[in-house]
Length: 96
Length: 418
Image 1 (cartoon, each protein chain N blue to C red):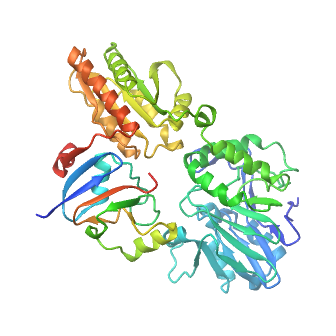
Image 2: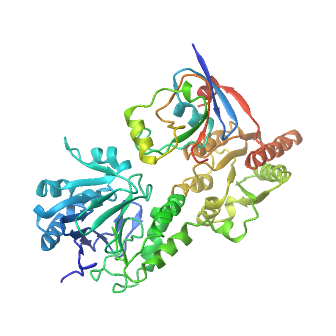
Image 3: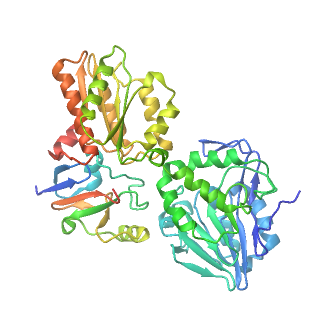
């Protein structure tokens, strides 16, 4: 199975995950500071800055695009509850 | 008996009084009852209704609305906040004024669909900078999320210098004289409301104040409690004071703050706590505090946690669990902002030592960061175990000042640990 390396820059932890793993599945278990609210692309609590590897993440759904637009965030910000890791990436909580 | 209704010549209160309410949303005591404030704004080309009221108070709301407007005149309905005590009468209002356009914040869209289960519900999402013209009066929107739901916004009418602030600057206080210079002493209700509703969202309060403070304000019209027309800026200033961290205001030398809490039955977890503090003390730029949970009521400790950068919690394991004072502390964090703070756990145990893992799970559940795995010691800590505690304290301290230790792990380790 394809693997990807997801690095949580806020706590200095890199996790090797099966490609296709959702960020939320890893970040909560590892103790990263990414916080969650609704977990369904609505509230924007889990805004996450992608420091590198944006091209290795799943495409945004229309719901995610709408929520990101509502929060007026830069282009390198994703919702951790929606985003699948397909290759190596480095992330941290937005604003953290 | 009538209710004072005129905020200005063009703006009238059309809300509802609920003097018998004693508990609100399960968590709030309301010894003075409450009001659900709704407002009617008249422009030369139509009327806007700002918020509605709880469904149970529909009769009051529609009766008052009809005193100031015909349903056919209603051009805009604004919901600053979708909680049912403000959105309860929306479906009926839309039925009576089908031509009216509904305006909600960008963040309210999915929530609106979940609350008003109505096919084909039309609405316009708005954010800061958007406005709606009522002819000679304008509704200007301010995006002020998380006060206290993700959807919350404020609406400003510049020609009247009135801010409809939603739950911000509100309180549960029922007095039909309605205006802050006419009602009884509601200071307690105002402060209590902030502490129980806005306190976890202080950073968002400061963001909202940055939008609100530049406004020219004749009155603030919140969605609960008195309308603030006498010195409205005082309430804005009080919000800034309440939302600004105190410790940093009083002694900000740039130090990061770490608090070590522990409780100990035989002194073993206490010895661990002391060793952890010794280790952390080797790291420069830390303000360290050590507290025995046996020696304090919970509330002052919660105040400390609110402004701390990191907390560590030590508990023995008794009957397979952390002890009650630890859970009392951990269950009290819902009222403050702890997301993203650094945290960790430690403790001595006799048999199985579940407490450390259970505390860590709770800390992660609270969305705190747990960068260093906790330390467990069987009964009395030996010399090398004391050294492990010192290492733990030092590692957390170094993490706090940005001297990050990087770790590489496999996903399977996380799954098996869960």
